[in-house]
Image 1: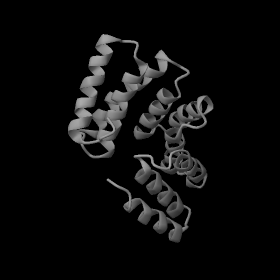
Image 2: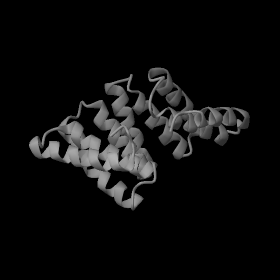
Image 3: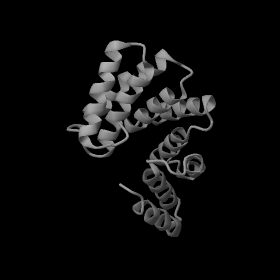
Length: 173
């Protein structure tokens, strides 16, 4: 899943589907299928971004239904919600994830990204900074830095936007 190549994401989905066939109550496998769909959209591998958005929502919801106390499941559902431009629902899920696990970097990032995408850039930066602080070597660091750059740009801080954009460009792909 985290290799994020087109072939690896397809293989990951297949393997997680096999895991579910063995254990239909394996919530993290449902989340992982949704995450693979998410990354296919983000990295441009999806034949149809909309089809992936549609395909990702069901497994994410199933993961939350299986374990309402799984912060990762709420985080995944929140990220799928913002991918679908369902910003209020995304905020709710990501806040739930952070109530369960305040140290979940990806949930902080997801909340920050949702705020940027929904026009609330001034509120986004503390969440994205928390993600960076909590996971300084995160494989998603480039995305973390891009979201800060976008937030800075959208509030009119062009110099800082450029600084963060250049830092993002320096991240491994």
